[in-house]
Image (cartoon, rainbow, N blue to C red; front, side, top):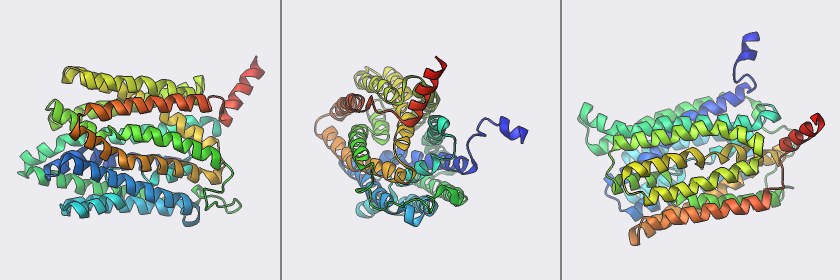
Length: 419
């Protein structure tokens, strides 16, 4: 018992640790699949606009499934749905191996959320279940660790970009087949994540004594939820104009970086983002959650302009890494803030509708981005990303700077008492 109390994460219960570990494993597979996706489709012979349509289909499917989750999660069960979606995505990854035709691939993308990145229907289930696995005063730290594990998985997954050339030389595989082997591996890893979700206890479900909201349009916090959903949807649309798959494609076509070089670039950017998340948790406790979300996000957008106007690959990579360090510092604060403002039975609705809003706008963003890219220039979607993200940050600050989460109010009261 003494040893357990000294464990660095002793304040997170068993379910919390299982969810965090599952996320890390899932993020490794899905992050890797997302990074190589545009390159894989390019090798299959699809145009830039067709690649954008495929990415949009993945986002659209994630939006539809997430909305369904927000309606039925508390009736069907969070654990069952987490297992189901992990298996569904595993099947989609395997489908990528055997299907090359465009329309069937679109169907796979839609139902398997291929290319949807981290905006997936399992995310609201994880976050709603995670919230009560640690003390309230540790909630921002909890979500920082949750995000760190997710980014750690994505960081390791970024290194997989260097595997196709190794598979080609070591096993005499064709370029296309080396990518297919990667998707088989992703499918197996996602099944491991499903097995961990299955080990979660009934404690993650909403208590039978609490009302199980099935209609998010009638819950008490609906005004707050829909306002935040609109803001987060704008942010997601902006980010999806230059999502990671398109960024990898941009570096590949503009500067001629090899797959091994791209693997190192995205490995480092994800590593920096993971390191920054712990700092973000401390900032949230120090300067406030909304301030942390805004004051780290705006500089990240400005660094993206540096990427665009960099004269060569070296400076572009430096600006990309600086952006990566700041870009996701808002996430632990956002998770803690949104989960704290609503009642336990409203949490799936809060995260679910936020995710739906982000997915809906992200559905059209890749297609818009690739169309503008092909018709005019890659600069257009990148500049659009910067302008819209800064607009989101300014709007969020002025609308919610005075709306404090309960843990922030408690910290203020404790400080006042000490004085």
